[in-house]
Image 1: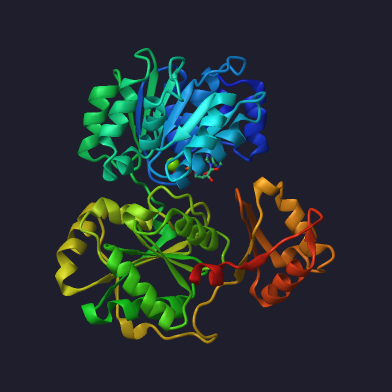
Image 2: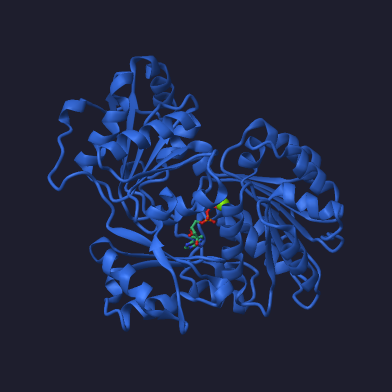
Length: 466
Ligand code: ADP
Ligand code: MG
């Protein structure tokens, strides 16, 4: 095997290199190694690699390298399909920008009120990350000016096209200076990408990393089902293998809803993620899945694409997708890093043709197992290790993660090991605690104080059900 290349072979500042190693980024991921030299040299670029391969840093390091922090103009714009992806990108850029002095990164997405965004823009920003519609809105109102822009990034371009953003992207790109670098990142390569690239990229270099899952790390199993036993079979798989964290992919929103109903009726904790959810509900579903308060996420491909969700133990293909590339993409979400992962697929007779296409693309035969092999192991239905408390107070109230951890481990008397992920949002803070102590933790936080103030705390799963 070839050695993974270190960042130090790139023309990056010493401060940036030091920051990278502080972040634990020791070597480049393959897409970074392939695209950073091109992007840092100033070329336009089309880069394709699967979700989780480190594409954000691949463009963020390039745009940061060109940035002049002393110049208070927007010098880079990153277009993303959704607010949560924009938030993830902003967070990653901020982490990578820590080496530099005072680089200001601003997120501008739809769904939020305009006024605070306009106020933030008046204060100035170097980098703007946002969704195409909202960015266009600001450009039309002239609250955002791109006259000094050096770098335009189209992140998750395939998904933006899926969501019908072609015209908005085109309108934004037309308002960018002609002299600029354009970087296009995508997990898949549908036709629209070529059209975007012809219109808005100049002599782009292409970097395409074929899907190469460490096949050995993903254990794939197929089960033949009748349509009327399909949803029930998901419960059988979960209760047999008991993975701590699973995404179950469905082809339709309706299938997502039906599956969640069936699982919940069986006592399995599952939440749906699909395009019909309100933004706030999507956020809360993702919070609970990421912090281990919900072991099963039931999602459509579009809803799950691009999300950085680590440590999936299993992927279940509840339906077989007609597109073999999508199948590869789904199962590639498990078996990351050094972990092994399961990929289970449920196929009816009608779907055997699709399975055949998948076998051709993967170059191997499927391993079939009978449903009758699945027996519930003891311990009852699959439940989560943690439960999420929602503190009604966030960044606006100057709450930081340490305050919440301090309150739980201090007066309240819990150990740090009983406290999981803490996420501070604008108006709410989410903290995962060991399910066994959740009720006590809720009580004590409600009785005690945070930042010297009384706060209201509730269970997120109960709040969401209201
Ligand atoms: P993509 O956009 O390709 O889906 P991301 O940019 O979201 O992937 O990166 C996935 C995860 O990998 C993130 O948590 C990120 O912090 C981490 N990561 C990125 N580059 C490196 C690296 N060189 N070394 C270690 N971790 C990395
Ligand atoms: Mg990404």
